Image (cartoon, rainbow, N blue to C red):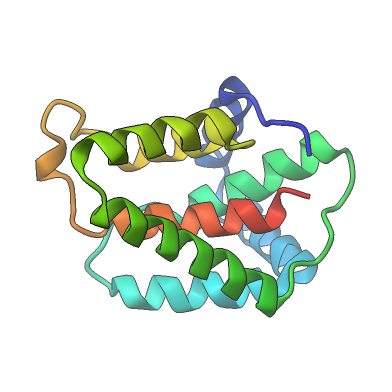
Amino acid sequence: MTTVPFEMARQEWEHLCDLDQAQSTQLSQRFLQEQPALGIYMLVCSEQLGDDHDTPFVELALMAWRVMSQTAGRPLTRVSEEAIEAAEAANEKMLMKLDACSEMEGTANIEHFIQDYNQMPLLGFALEVLMQGNEENPQLAPENIGIVWVWLKSIIDCLDQ
């Protein structure tokens, strides 16, 4: 799939933020019709966050689906449960590998990932939204940002067809 530009993600994010309740519900219903397995995955992930979070996980996932569908110029192929599990396992494996590396090896692996990842502008935009308000002191960001980022990357990986 063509890489989604950062600016396209930003514009779609602003559009989604301007939707009223009825429009948001309609968009969510369309997503669930087109991507039921991803809808279930997002529900399970959201439940893990609990009620006390204000992380825009679902909203960012919907934004990713919308811009990737627009970029493809067609509805995206329905993602299977197996594809979601494989993407999440691969992303968790990547994180464990990074965690086990020395700082120099980790930096090289991250640089390699950034250069080779097809949807880096989209994923980078999602991280920017997740870190909003914590740019100066990332250590103060909510603890769940890392796992939410992995979930979003898994969704983007599945949709990147």
